[in-house]
Length: 336
Image (cartoon, rainbow, N blue to C red):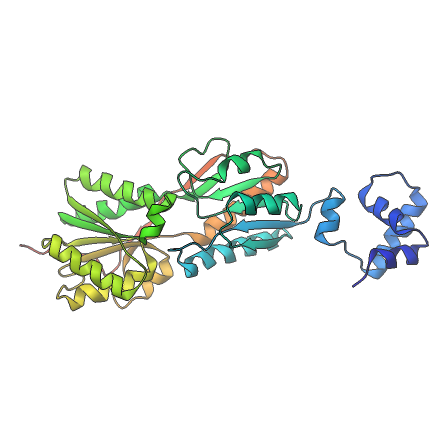
């Protein structure tokens, strides 16, 4: 690896002169600047991110903050990671992935070291402890998710409340009168995770609007938990004919559990989900679903950051409307 001392030796100057030529912090002659530039080009020297940041230049690194907390479904998170990394590379930026649950300390640690130009923050809670720091940081940030108090922040997400409503509206239009939401693991709700809470709000509001009997059941992300939830729902609501699933890990096990309990999908039970299209379309019974647009969300979050880094005005709130695709898992309610 070429070092700044190699450049200095090649150009016949001191290492501090090379640093001044890069940072512009002190005046040097044009002839010296050209010699330094020629040496850098000939040797292929590239200042590392920390040196560029200390010199007052950009590091060309974005931080993606996605704490892998209990209840987080890693395969879906990785879809977001890939989309952010792919979009960042189109802008010649790398991505520093932060997965520890450090809260404000983690954000401050990264910001204070000047390793990154800007931050994308995921797993947003309605009352997120990181908000005051994000508002005060001297670096641009974008949240994939909406806290309850989003003023002064840049947020983007799927409209999860409208997604929950869209699933219920679809079931109501098919004549279903008793519906249930099989939701995220309990830890996700205990933390007040914004997207999960908003799905519940949309589901219950739409069920009330259409006069449906409804229930909400969190579910751990295992086949055993899916079986227990299916049994509990049928015991508590024997007239159940419509289910909304917002838990990618149990979508297939839940359909299997209901069928093992004697319900045909969609003959006896219609199932909808909020999940990636690829998952919904790949199951033995393809599931009617609202797509989780991870690729679009990640790419647009990066575009918002690039605009902010360029000093451009961006909208504070960007909500993507839900897109429901009908597949084989839903049909009219069977006559009683």
